[in-house]
Image 1 (tube, helix red, strand yellow):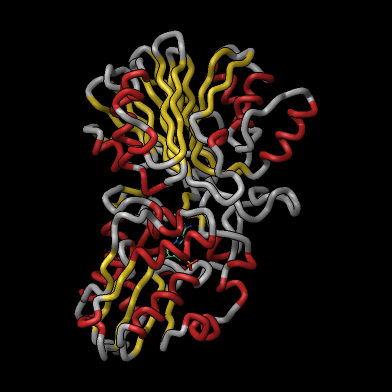
Image 2 (cartoon, rainbow, N blue to C red; image 1 turned 135 degrees about the horizontal axis):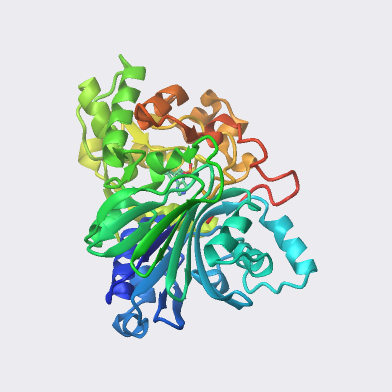
Length: 460
Ligand code: AMP
């Protein structure tokens, strides 16, 4: 998780980057940063917090130049520090180069150790810096050639934006785990994590960057090259389930529509289920519940009021804070709930903490029965590719049967969507391949970290 946004060839570069990052805020709330190119220098501004906390008018004015790349960061506990805020800028034998990264490199520790042995000095503890040091050491004739040569040394997930004076480069890993989309705004090019950012910035979506593709934009011209053969396209299915904004298009389909259809699919899988009302855990669960309601005929009702000013609770890196903000966030609407059998849908159950709290809140507010449904299958395996799905031990479905999870969360019933149904709804005819390793426990060969090499919690 993390969001990236880049724009070239406009006098409003820093302001449009701000708009893009603001639109991608749901992808991370820990830090934000923009680097601009004024023709000879790279100007940087980064800070901890939300986009509108990190930047003000003055900061944006100081970021002169006609190109910009920006980043917003989500991070897990331990690495929450300004030195890890991106874009990072490195001044090396390669000249000035900035990088913004969405994803997670699974061999970063090994590569870093080798580079450090050879004398490289790292500024941050983030895995993203590795590519700049590799590039400074193993050079080609152009920056594109240099990057192409070195990207193939990385495993795991990456969508990268690079910037050097006069040039912006985007690259997506050969599996296409994390998203990267190309857009146009007049004569400018945009590269962004999601289509919603391109559209809010006033641009038009052109296409996705292909797995293993690099695009270099310089002097108003875009060049595309393949730095690696694309592997089996395994984009992350969790983008559709939870992460992407509903107005974005992922794999050719609007996320909102996909979620609505998943809700309907869940209703078909649970045909005959009895409930007075169906509802969703706001905000992400709501669309699923609407789709469920349409298909099943069970009326939809909102049962929680969501306070929108608290941020996403899960996004707080620390467990204690996460629990506290969850209390602030949702308050039950008693009159709707009282005496009813409620079917409540969330996008996913990770640790089970949220579902347990939701069920208990509904019961305290007078619900007769509470049936919980997850719009995705049980999460049984960690994510090594940039979604903060923690260690196996913390994943409740990896330890407990469905019946025991039901008892733990205190629900009267518990149902999960099946994996074939999820894949079926998320894909379109030409594009059915996804990374579903968090649901299946199966990883692309050589892509999960080797035992002891940093497996477990990660996430950018
Ligand atoms: P948990 O309480 O650990 O079971 O988390 C489940 C809740 O967190 C659900 O309400 C989801 O909307 C949300 N969620 C699930 N996966 C993630 C993730 N990787 N990052 C942030 N939030 C998530």
